[in-house]
Image (cartoon, rainbow, N blue to C red; front, side):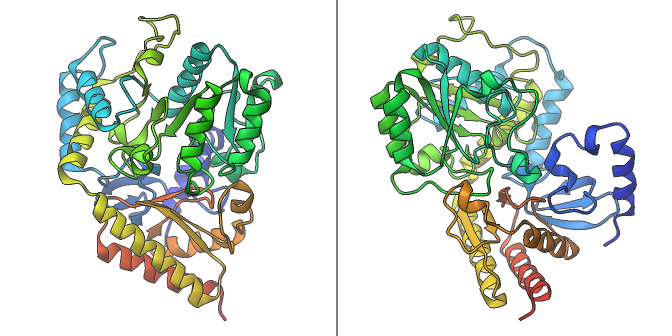
Length: 430
């Protein structure tokens, strides 16, 4: 598959942008080769600068649950942009999107719109510390919550891809405020809260881990976190940047029936535009300025174009309810990948929740970062390129989630499963 134009563009980008990319995983460091420069997307497909068509299972890392360039979303954004792209003043579109979020997730009584997931998590932690008058945060190994200082401790996603344990530039004293525990291990949380509970402001968790690859919560894990945090009088924060409106319309908290104190959202709520949010209990959220003393602000927060695209996306999700279709497609992809691996005699563990999944090149099971890290990065890289050569675009990292959209069809699923079977037969002949 020709990629000369992408290669030329990448060479030029590297003279102007660190590493040639504006987010590290895009550079293909984990899998090698030339990153594809994409120029167009429609439905479940994207086209690169060399004119190659790809069946897309990245979906801009999760926001595009309706597929690329959904007509109603594009028109909503276009209509908003015609009236003005930003004002730095209140608009009705902010209220419309906030209402849709609050109605979808009963744990959220008030919500504040921001521009990125990193910003939303950072602000939620500040609020939790102010509310509890404590400073320390529990997070989980392999969980990624953006790149704010103090949270780049044994994080997954890009850090795992690049093999970086922490990030230079973060003062040790700030990182020391973060307590890192193994995911899916309630006993470790109970012990940390027993020993240092009076110092811990919150427990921050991806209810379905998505940044060490997809790792579902063990049975009772989320309800256990809810019980333990209530007993310790600290807050439970769900980072639903990925899972919000993805695994169900009510997010992971709706799927698993657990109500956190605060929720962080992103990706889908912007409809493909930069937008995120954090929200939760009224008594906590009322501590935010201008109502309370906790300061948080942003010039482009609640951008009207992003709000229009996000509100239309949520409106379509409500009216069309694609979740049963996505569940069916997700089951078919996971089953097809597992069958292809078994026939090829290659150890692969497929983890899935709804329309997000990861094929780990390890025998498994994969239940936390330690088990995820046993995956063969080399085998995944070879598989990635074999799939790319067949026109299937997967995440260029073993430790990322793949995403289905409502635009994918049963034929698309059959194609990816056939491509996977062919790739594994060619790569690992018996």
